[in-house]
Length: 403
Ligand code: UDP
Image 1 (tube, rainbow, N blue to C red):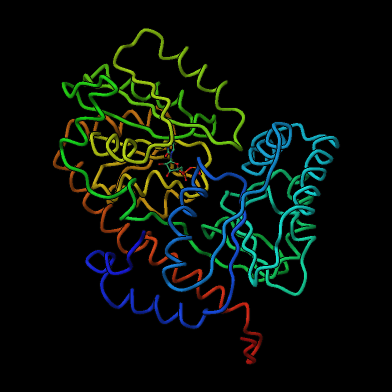
Image 2 (tube, helix red, strand yellow; image 1 turned 90 degrees about the vertical axis):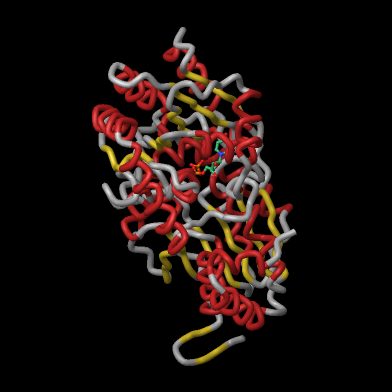
């Protein structure tokens, strides 16, 4: 149960007052979020926290997850990679698989809410069920350089929405519908981000047999090639030649990501016999993720492509120095040499690791700046306020109000 008042010491009274005011204006409207997985990945992470807060604000909010089999999610993962600019062979059969599952969801899902908020490409075709309600397409991925074939396919659906939302300015595209820039957020009160005692942190390290005798570098991510876990290992190995340290690569799985097992296998093979590399397959356990982030000396996010990168915000909120790639939404969170270090290569990442591990004062300062940057820009309260303004804007046209 989320209590709005608990956010006041973190963000201030006036922000909570704004939320309540906007909540009043939206009373009576039903909002329905739709995505493709209830657990795993950033979208599920955000919705898990956002839906209860919207309810607490008095807005009737539902969250539905589309259904799909392995074949469907293999296709949507291909779309995901292709939209991120990775080379993928997309066949006519892929589109057919996508359309067949989409049709089943169209037939089965009730989308009669006042505002239907569709996340990412997987459920995008639901728009074909549109009646006289409002529809938003929320794109969480970096589509600045997409595979044209997949993008053209999606465009036929996107143009039927009222509005689109992107996470970063560089992701926006010519669409012919209204678009909004709204960055994701983290919830400082969630199990993932709330403060933990030293004992709680130590208990998790003990559970995974990780000693505190060497500095800990950690990357928490689904086992996905775009998160570059092999690059993380290489950067760690290079840094370790100079400073003895250990590496945690922790990740879970998501229903809509079928590549995980294969990537995990590659990671294990690369880590070989190095007992200072801890590969953890986490069950969905937010306290454990929180504890591992807090136990770390440096957090990495060496993604090749990234939507926003919630893991970066999570680490910065915990005051941790972060080394992350200069891709997607990461540079919104990290101002190089101010709230973390950005890198462009394995060598750059290992150089940054060495810098931080050998200079704890500098590392601490970056972490502190990072925490304030997240407080001011990437907490759930700002995110919800922007979503509520977006919802209200759907009922305004020129100077006329349709509430
Ligand atoms: N996460 C988790 N357990 C894992 C791996 C990731 O809880 O084993 C969480 C992570 O803490 C973050 C989210 O999943 O909250 C991933 O979001 P992000 O934007 O970093 O990446 P995405 O998976 O959406 O590409």
